Length: 311
Image (tube, rainbow, N blue to C red; front, side):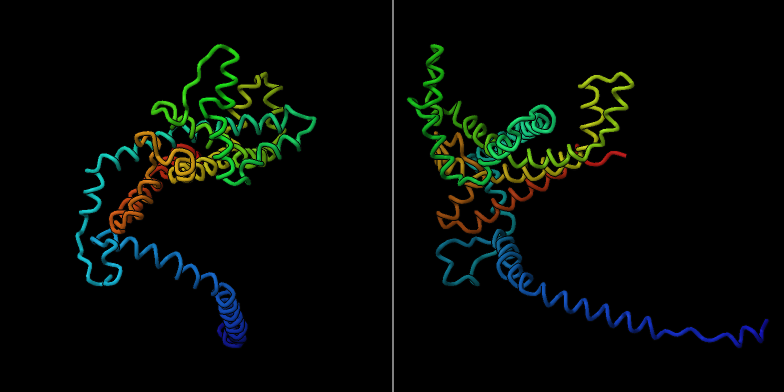
């Protein structure tokens, strides 16, 4: 046995060395192709992100643009000021109201439309799909102008209500109805995106599961709740996260339609931050933007907790 073992040929490491060299060459090539994006990302994304975070701990304003290295470090003073500012707290309340109402409503309506287009509607299905998705690819400014005409005191909506003897309000100038009006427009505009996601997910649900449940006597609601919903849970999570992130940053709707009014009834946190940058309060605005960032992270974690995978 000893002689046979000593006579066995030694292992050759050469192929492994050649494989390692090949992997290194492929890695260098990959980084070479990725370099333009990495450079642009570092210069125009990562750099400003880190810079704005550092700025939020200073007292930098417009007067410090010529001498950026002479600003004072104030620690968490800007964040403390934010939560002592009634207008900022009001904008946070508007933003969270917008998200809490609009996200579930958008998901529910988009899922209902997707179910109808997947099974219920047979004729002109493509036309309906294009119609629901058209607002997504339409300019928000054009949409806002159309909705302003619809929501005017003598607009289409009040004209329709007048047919039933109902006197409609001035929707965009009412502290009660301005924010719900923007929510309605945002939900209508974003249904198309989630509809496409849900349609793709519904087409991946195995038909055999529904057929087996029908054999066992399950009705339509039981099949929907116990088969369809668990099967499309990943799509629902994705839809909830991207919609929540988008709605937490809602800016165009109030900026174009109400300018945050009336009486700050539609002032969002993103618009408040924009105003502070316009006033030259750069450090204060940076702090506000990072509060919004933390709100996005918190909402995403909650959504992952509620809709994440359950084994």
